[in-house]
Structures are given as C-alpha cells and as structure tokens.
Length: 112
Length: 114
Image 1 (cartoon, rainbow over the protein chains, first blue to last red):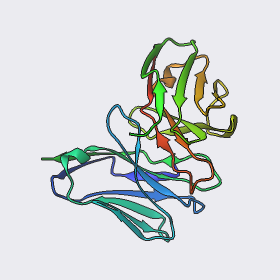
Image 2: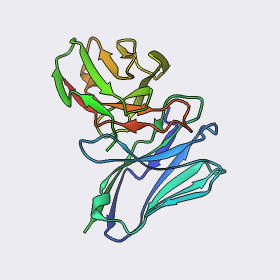
Image 3: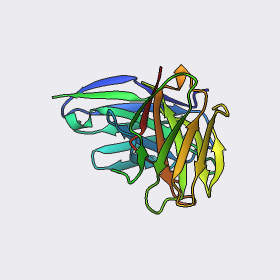
Image 4: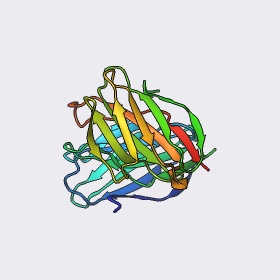
C-alpha cells in the first residue's frame, strides 16, 4: 500500500528555472512531512520539513507548499542549479509512529 | 554530513548466508532506525530500536533482526539471504522525544547477494 505518492518520476529543468515535485498522501493522521535529498552513493539528507498547520515554508531557494484539504504537498526549488541534481524524496510520519514513509522519489537533473 | 556512520560500505554475499551490518548513531541520539532501499525506490522501514528494545517494525520477515547496545550503536542481522535482499541498507538516528523525531541518515551499506 503506497501511502505517499510522488510525481514526476524524473524531471529535467534548465539552470535558473523552477523545479516542482508533487506528493499526495492518504493518512490524515500524518503530522510531519519532510523532504530528503539523496546524491548517488549517499544516504538521504533532510532538506526541509513542514507541519500540516502551516501552508508554506521557505528555506533559501527551497519552498514547501502544503494543501491540507487536498492532502497534497509540493517542493519548489527556485533558481535551480546543477548542484541540485539529485533524487528527492517526499515523506510523511505521525508522532506516535517510529517509521518515516517515503515516496518513490524524483530524479532531478538541472541542465547547465 | 550527519554524524551517523555505517560499516561496511559494501558487501557481497551468496544466497543462504548471513550478514551483520553496523551503525553508530549521531552523538546525543538514542534511537536507531533501519531502512532498506532497493535500487530506484524510496527507503522502506525495517525496524527501530530505542533503549535497546525494538520500538516498531515494518513489513519484513523475522530473518531480519537487530540489536542496540548501551552506547546506542546498532546492528542489523539478516539470515538466510535471498537475492531480493540486495539493496542499500540505511541507518538513521534520532532523539526520542524530540519534536516529531527528525531522523538523520548514514551513508548506507550496499549489499549484493549472488
């Protein structure tokens, strides 16, 4: 059962453009939504996270938009750079559970 | 870079063998979670250890087992290896009780079962 659905599977963006990755979840008990960035040969690194009582969170060039009623959230990367080329995972968790549930990942490539 | 370390970095085993993977948590963290990441997929939760006891388990068979030691380091043991066990095994540490328990991942151990 896929509780967090992520799209697109892969994405190519020109340098300086905006990268947008979308996720949808099913379980309304989720109360923590992190995004992870993973480079080849490395473990996932926490990028930014949001709670469901906030509609938007911005950290530098990275912004999470959250739509609680639609059960959807998205990551926007502004002014995308070649160094942003990586695989991005959205995820969800609820406080009483020990596990993070990951989406299937989006492979992002930024063309110079 | 997080302070989570894992060993070994790579490992090759044959079907039916047993394997032990090791993880040292980030300083100050008392909880360790293990995940399996198959090629091209997101990590899947195996189990979590807190205060040396299993604190939640994902949909993995009993041949996946673990330990946590008093210094909070942890081991993942897999018996009777199968070809489908080939994956990147990730360890993540966190501080139980911290707000929503942000988990910090190590670099992983790449296991290949032949």
